[in-house]
Each structure stands twice: as C-alpha cells, then as structure tokens.
Length: 391
Image (cartoon, rainbow, N blue to C red; front, top):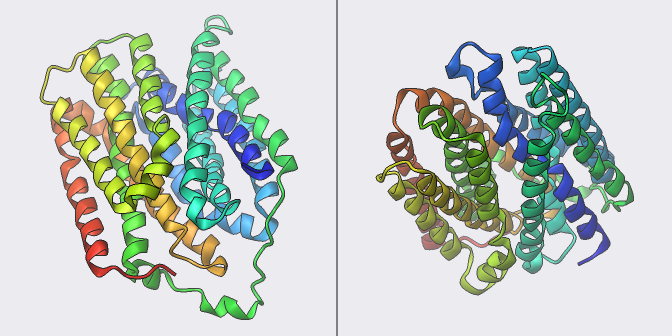
C-alpha cells in the first residue's frame, strides 16, 4: 500500500457509485420517461456507449496532462452530469436523461483507468493484488450508492429519483478532492528515442498473451453487462418482482463482482492467469445453467452472484495479464485500445439487452452468451499453446 494506491481506492469507493446507480435506476427511469418500453434500457446502454467512445480520449488526455488532472476533471464532470440527470427527471425529459447517462459514461472511462494507475504504483508481479485491492472498494461503492439512491429517491416530492441523482452528485465529486493529492508518474516524452518502438494495433493483437488478456476481459464484460442490464427489466417488468428485490439482487451481484478481490490476486499468483480465467468461465456456466429453472427471486439472486464472481476472475486476470504485455512507452496506447475494444463490445451487448429481453425469455437471453464463453476458452488455450513471451 502506498499513497497513490490509497487515494485511488478511496476515489473508487465514491466514483464507482455512478456505475452502480446507473445500472440500478437508469433502466427503470428510462421506462418511466419513455412511452416505448423497448427503449427502457437505452439510458444504461448509452452510458456504456459513452465509456466506449471516451476510452481512447481518456488515455490520450492523461498521456498529455497526467493522471491527476485527468481524474480530477473527470470527477467534476461526472458530478455535473448527475445534476443534469436530476434536472431531466424533474422535467420528464428522456432525451436529456439519456444524454446525462452518456456523460456519466465519459466520466467512467476515466475511472476505469484507475485500475491501470493502481497497477503502475507497484512492481508488475504485484499488479494483480493492486488491481484486486482497488476493485474490492467496489463493495463499499455498491452499498453506498444503491442504498443512498433508495433513501433519497423521494427527497423531492412528486419527482421520484430526482433526489437520488442529487445525492449521487455529492458522491461523485469526492474523487476530485482525494485525487488532487495524487502524484503523477513521469509522462513519457513522445520525442524519446524509444518511442519509435511502440507497436501498431495489429502487432498488439498478434501477441497471443495480449489477445488473451483483451478477449478474456472483453467478453467477460460483455456477458456480465448483457445479463446485468437485462436483469432489472426481466425481474421488475416481466416477472413483476419489486424494485426493492431488484436493488437487493444488484447489490449482491456487485458484491459477487468485488468480494472475490480479497483473494483473486493471490489465486492468480498461485495458479496463473489462464487457470483463473477458466474458473471465471465456469462461474458464467453456472449462471447460464440456473436460467433453466423457474425465474424466482432466489434464482436471480444466485445467478447474478455467480455472474459477478465470473466477471471478477476474468476482468482482474485480464487486466493483470495485460500490464505484462507492453512497455512503458506503449502503455497509454495499449490501455486505450484495450478499453476501446472492451467497452465498444459491451455497449453493443448492453444496447441489445433491452430489446432482446422484451422479445425473448430470460433462458434464451442467457443461452445467447454461450458462444462468447467458447471464444474465451479458445483464445486462452491458443495462448497457452503458443507460450509467447510477454514484452
């Protein structure tokens, strides 16, 4: 533990509440503001689009002005987007609410860079633990964000959920305070003679280990976001379960996403990246298998926990493996490219979730994830066979 890592963890607690509340509320609010029910998941989906579009931008900005100022400005922007969301709900504007979700996604593109910043604060062999510690803060974030959103939803009478986003604005401004004390590492000079050694995107993808890291994190995120986005709609509107039960399922799903971080870093060190990725795919298989049974609250509860655990293993192992596959001069390019692929694919999955869950059953939606698991298994196996050395 060092000062920078401590500041990043503290910022993760408050900054990541935007993601939790967006997943929890934006689909429900979208269904209230739009007369077209198939557009209910457009706000959470456009949020993911905001992340995808802004990943290269976030990496580029921080390569120029440094992580500290980039993170601080992103925090201020996220807080402002929350206030815009509160205003949009107050005036019943679906378009403005969707735009505010897009802006929150832009801010989240910077927050997702926390994990790379955390990995950079320690030696590379300790990166899995640093990333795990950072993501562990997501547990606190989930319970703070969702609980506060529930408690403040009626703060403004006759305008439910306006208070939730006002409260979220207060939470998302906190990283700006913490990270004003963050110390930048040295920014790579583009005139450095070694800068010519930076690989092209095609060369990155040609590295089996880089491809393994990116594919595991990408499709791990796609499956998680696809099913998590569909869950509130399927639970609340299709199977008529209460919003409180939806909130509980999402909270424990996020718990499943982040609680394993207590030991994921140690497991990676002991068993290796590939074995932890295989385990992540196994937990996803459990989630899909549960869809064969009656879609009760308990079924959703268990399947979303397994979904969270699978994501944790795939995302942490993918991120930790990625940082071993590039050199210092390549880091912003590699990180930005990796996140662009992850969140572009996730945006497509999230955008399609609302439409598909309104047309198909919960079971069919789950079974549509199987091809992604097969791709992950193939790429891991291929990389292990090739045994290409990391850069």
